[in-house]
Amino acid sequence: MVQDPRTEQLGSWIVVLSNDAIGRAGEYQAASIFELHGITTTHVDVKAVDLWVETPSGRRVTVQVKSSLGPRPLEGGRKNPRYKFHLHRQTACAMADVFCFVALDLGCIRLCSSAELAQGNQMFHARDMNRQMMLEDIKRYLY
Image (cartoon, rainbow, N blue to C red):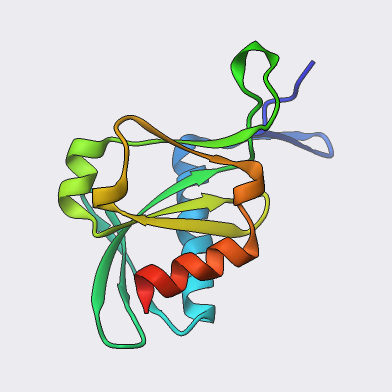
């Protein structure tokens, strides 16, 4: 039996994380990573935008953050688990300049512009969530 990644046993307590809690954790993780790379970050509560960032060059960028606790195996027993992120593309793409996809289990992010997004869900192979690709994305979109 596979345990739901949103549920954690803490002694006699069982903690069940809501989607909002997972999303909020991802927003703070992304903000932390940005700040550690010299990108000034402000957490905002605006429709379809989670962060306002100022790049080291002074450019201002709006960011929509999507979070995942970990990769999921694909249906049908196929290998290569993937991180899956649900997008409300029509609303969010009209508002955010950049999307940030957070792998909470690894502390890594991936970025892409709104124009690059596909309809529906965005998926990343687990092997594509790594520090090197994260740094390349940060340089590409936020410098």
